[in-house]
Length: 332
Image (cartoon, rainbow, N blue to C red):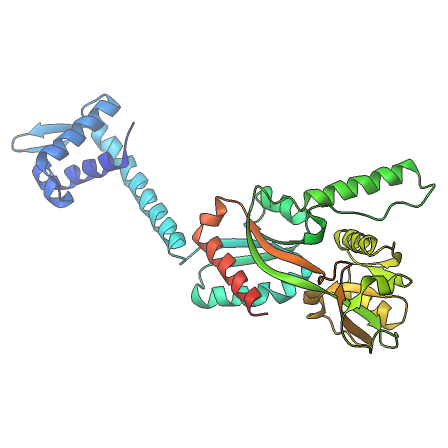
């Protein structure tokens, strides 16, 4: 096998015309140069230098190998420089996948801080909800995925049961959706950086009797209301929380568009529960926001994390991006 160090010796011998001069140029001993040249000739199974008087010159095979060695060593030097730039954060790439509320609240300050100190690191962003974002991470389409899950569910995701008499195909589709969402909360093969616990906030029409009472609202107090639910995972968690409070919510509207949720609540068409991060990027005009407590009396929250693969966590640009995301979360 031809080694790069042997090619460097060959280049030095060709340039200086002797083993001794090559040794001085490379900062080693003449016997070391001789040994490496012998090892190189053994690898190619032909002489590479020819002695002539007091000097030496390359054989035909030596000249051919030197021609290729020049390009090989130049390529290696370029590769070493690029890797050093990435390791030193003078270059690099981080592809983020995030759910919308984190895209508008956590990602912008984190990326801005990273670019301030390391403008050579490129950061890109696409939006996707878990479990799609986790599939993208595992599939090599990104380096970091921002995701969330609800600790009360312990990884289980409940969906509203289909109404009595629903065709078998619809029931099978609902069961498949539940399985996919549960898979989206399995992070055992990933490195998770906790960012924050995002409290869930109740949205009530401004004229609702509980709007001006002050203090937290128990979910059981909203048992008779019409509900506006969000994404499938959020909807499943809402059903689960309400079941714990002893009732099944009547969900009349389902949308993952947060301004639409606010508009429906403001029009008096129902009540809703949204993450606090969502309300930081939406104007809650015409609604009253109240803290929400579960049946156990604990605040309702969702866990927001940044996920990556174990090997990617060691990449300098990825590690720095995780650090900046944690800093942005800490400032909220």
